[in-house]
Amino acid sequence: MYLLWILGIFFHMAAADGEQIYGELCSIDQHCINHLICDKGRCTTPYPPRPRNCAKIGFVYKDKNGEVVQSPWDLDRNRRDIQCPPFCGHQNNLVYGPICVLNERGCARSEECTLYGRCGFNGTECAPTPEGCAASDVCRDEGWCQYGKNYCQLNEVGCASSQQCKTLGYCGLGEDLTSGNPLVGGGKDKYSTRCVVTPKGCAFSERCLKKGICGYKAAREATCEGSQLKCYYPAMCVAGPPSPESYRND
Image 1 (tube, one colour):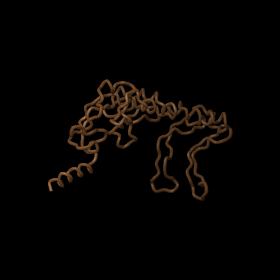
Image 2 (cartoon, helix red, strand yellow):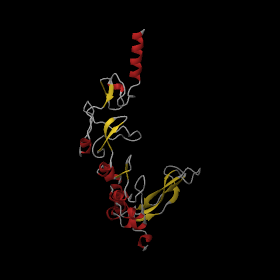
Image 3 (tube, rainbow, N blue to C red):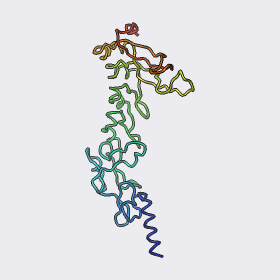
Image 4 (tube, one colour):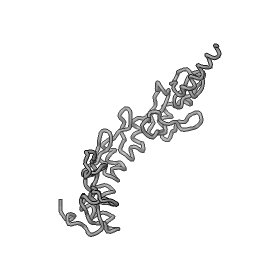
C-alpha cells in the first residue's frame, strides 16, 4: 500500500507538469515551470546568467538543450526570445531564479524602439518616448509621430510628412470608418483617427505622377459592389486630373 501511495504522489506531480517554481521540490524537469530544470530535488536555472552576460549586446539566453528561452511574461502576445536587446538587465526572480529582464538600456536599443518608438522603460515594459515616437518607422511611414502614454499617436504634422502621404496622398488627419456600415444603423459603427487622403495629397503624390491618379473623391454613399444595398465609401484618390480643391491655399 505504501508503494502505491508513493506511486500515486509521483504521478500526481507528473500531471501537475510545470507548476513548481525556482527552489521548490521536484522529481523530474517536467515538474518545473518554464525553462527550469530539476537538480538534486529542486527546481533551478540551467546555466544561470550573470549581470555581465545579460548586459552584453547580442547575448542570447538558452536552456539546457541549447534552445533559446522565451520570455515567460509574454502571455498575451508572441513570446520574445530572451536576448539583449531588449532583455539587457538582470534579476534574481522569485519564480524563475536568475534571469535576464527588460531595462532602459535594452529598450533603447530594441526593435520596438526602432519600429514603434517604444524606447523608454516604465519599470515593467518598454514604453513610448517623445523622441522615440518622432524617430520611429511608424512615424516616417504612417504618421504615428506624437507621444502617447501607451503608444505613439497620429498627428497632423506626422500625416503630412509621412511616406504614405508622399506616395499615396494620405496627408490629412481625420476620423475614418473602421468597421460597420452607417447606412444600416444599429449603432455598431466604429470610427478611428486615421491619416486620410486630401485633394492636395492626391495631386502631389507619387501615384499621381506615375499613374495619373490625381483626382480626389470625397466620402460618399453608393451602391455596394455586387448588390443593390447602399454602402459607405471613404474619401479616395481617383484617376484623372487634380480636383479643384487641390489648388486652394489652406
